[in-house]
Image (cartoon, rainbow, N blue to C red; front, side):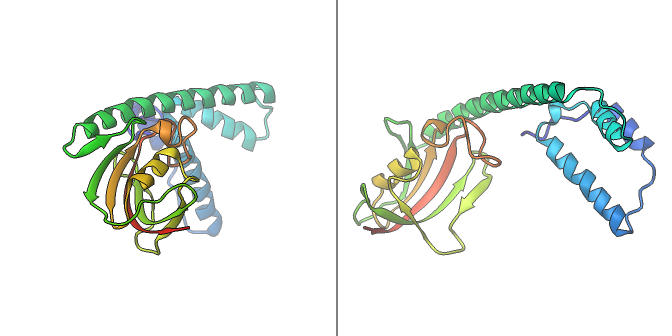
Length: 221
């Protein structure tokens, strides 16, 4: 999620920080305790705009002091389910809006071709060999990234990868079939021909456009 959200309003956050005692991180127990808190904070950051820190602290305090919970298990489960749906709905909306904006800009670039499926591709180097077809495997080097440039997967720096042409997401499959051995292409996959509403958490969110750089190195039967 975007980093511009805040757990609490800035004055409240400063007040909370000011109330904390000086923390010493010398013993293993102290360091482990800090690690627990830090990891909790990282998890909260993924949906921070929905977090009420006062309620979080009350929950922690009540649990540590072995007080009776202020809510029943059923109430907490129902609230968590509602929060999860709210978060997913927001992610879907953001993915759709950001994806549409990126695809519109990208399609207007010189050299970008848009196919009937919505796949956008740009030939960086023409190949002179055969094109892979159904039942074959394509040997490639590739780099996958989000529209903002965040890289989520790559074969560069290691050995080439062999993909069964018909066993990858539809947009990637279509791109492979458009290529010839020796070719180099940059493609943008609308979410409908990538991972759709489900995404591939934690990196690829719902309705996420994916960008791939692909070099076709060979074909295997």
